[in-house]
Length: 332
Ligand SMILES: C[S@@+](CC[C@H](N)C(=O)[O-])C[C@H]1O[C@@H](n2cnc3c(N)ncnc32)[C@H](O)[C@@H]1O
Image (cartoon, rainbow, N blue to C red; front, side):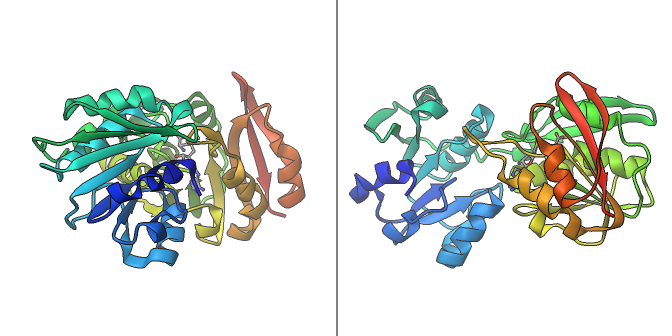
């Protein structure tokens, strides 16, 4: 059981009735709180919740339509995303209670100050390295306009400017990551056909790919609903077509790809997490045509080349700068 869930269950009597658990972990909490519903934006966790709890778990960037009289937000990593989610929940809770739970090392003490917009926050519990806070929503705010919270920046490319839009909580929100910038300098000679941007975030790599290889079909995949929504905004802002898939890991990617391009994930929440990247290196072969290429950027200290060579084929280093390397391997 996630320690944040354990903290809620220490006062389970508070969490009966029409409760919404936003950003909940994929553990046993919905079984322990049988009248509660969940709201997830992580496709992997949603898959687990859906399998166990069916329609009791809602997925997406917007709060579920159904009514709820109290809500708990599991603190996400980003301050901007926390602000959006608190407002989205408070907007539906006039006269109700809004709770915030999170780990101390994730910054719950600081985040609790964000509750003060809605009333006077009260700390209810501190245990398992977590804290639980509560605020009573006397006056519900307006429902936030998520698209209006997108940050936009412009990239100057050889073939003209490209607009990039990112929603709160999305990787490298409002700016281009240095690793991604290096990968964008190494896009020559990809085998055209069906290209995938794995872990697409705001969709910058996928959008540039579509501009560079207009006759190719481009798919963009990310586990996070806010990233998938950002990618759709980025494609639309540039009049580009692409298939956006919100799913967990390379296993959910199309097959018969001619190339996979990625700045793969290496953090998840406050925990370092390489599983999705290792799965990408191990399973890329199953999604690539013969001769298909995996091209990625990674921190040079990550020992990816041996894994790539075991699972795909000889690995070339196409470039190196600022502690990042560009690796390329083709399926033999
Ligand atoms: C380093 S970021 C790169 C984002 C974007 N491609 C860029 O260059 O700005 C990695 C992305 O992988 C996504 N990700 C993390 N775990 C994933 C998984 N299991 N399946 C698919 N995407 C995942 C994250 O949400 C994040 O957007």
